[in-house]
Amino acid sequence: MNYLSNVTRSAGDPKVLSTGPSSLSAADRLGRSLGWFSIGLGLAELLAPRAITRALGMQGRETLVRAYGAREIGSGFLSLSVEKTAGLWSRVAGDGLDIATLLSAYHPNNPKRGNVGMALAMVVGVAVLDIVGAQSVTTRHGRQRGGWRSYSDRSGFPQGLAKARGAAVSKLDGRLSGQASTG
Image (cartoon, rainbow, N blue to C red; front, side, top):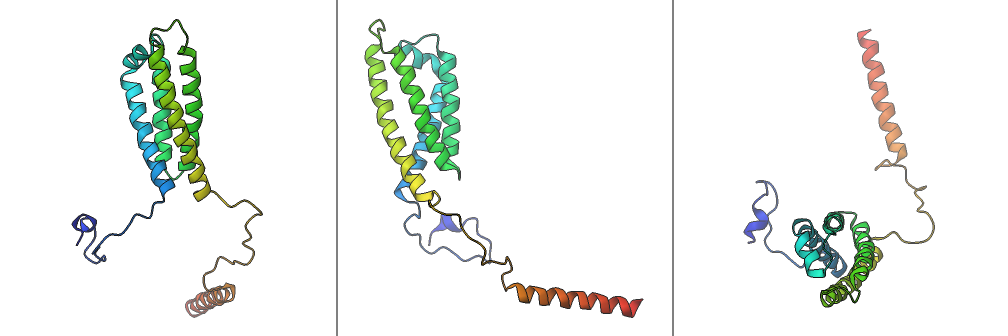
């Protein structure tokens, strides 16, 4: 018996006897991992911008690094939400900003140019994962392309429109007969 699965269950709820494989697809697991990575990276950028800028020879850009940290955290939370597609695509856009910023520091006068090169390689690698994750999640959870969905065959009444009309008429007849006997 799986004790942890049964901790929050009420007395009348069915018990979990065993658990099976996760219902999350590989795309969902990658998206979740990228979301948590984004939150961790964003916290590092928010809490230690001086260390990051010093390592990259970009002193004076601490505010920019903090802003990128806030962006990373937002993308991470969005990637973990029901709007995971938007979160993952925002990570891809953020990768473009990160690459552009790092390229501006990748010049011969920067004594930390080697660190910037390694950072660029890492960001490009993560960008590839972000693109794969965003495309996979979009494919899995996106709407099918094509025509509009037609709901013309649905009434909104689970037992049909005729039965709903019959119930409404019966209720109205009951109210009218009650008013006639008390009036």
